[in-house]
Image (cartoon, rainbow, N blue to C red; front, top):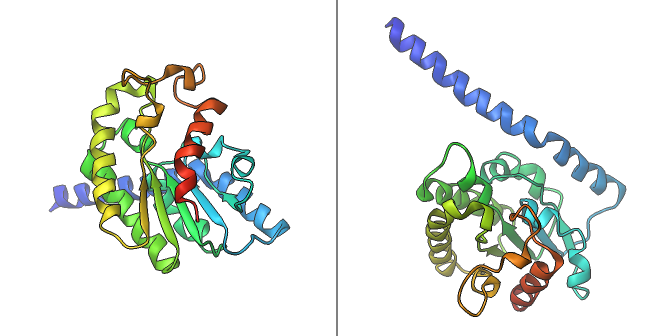
Length: 219
């Protein structure tokens, strides 16, 4: 009985500790978004960008899509776990016609090394929440890019991309936007020249490629 109580206690400490860490990690980012929304009412029928640093660092995304209204609420370093944790804060203030997600790369590269199945499960949970909030909005997922600095995780990334692609293809009003092949050279190798020195984040040239691939999907 004592061992059972001890194990139960440790389990709850782990769970609540994990949730607290998720909150502490990005609390300031979420408060910043709330401040922006209080200063200026978010436009209706916009395209809402959600996810991690590949979107966060795309600060001039609106300039790449001048005929679209973009609301960028991505926060660097985030995982699908964090999107799920902060889902209400990320979704409630807006009335978008489309939600575009780039997230999952940090989940895969995290120290806990989740399986492709687990990462996919996290995505499905977030998709379900987004759909519940926005029944009529288009939901699109941008494929996980093969960052050179994370080559060891490419096999898992490929599995996750495939799982999400199959899932999105089976859903109505949903899209899977594959940017991977467009970031290769003529020999099918990853173009390292598209990346900054950290071989993780992209240069403007990388975003130009994303723009070309993404534009036909934008509503």
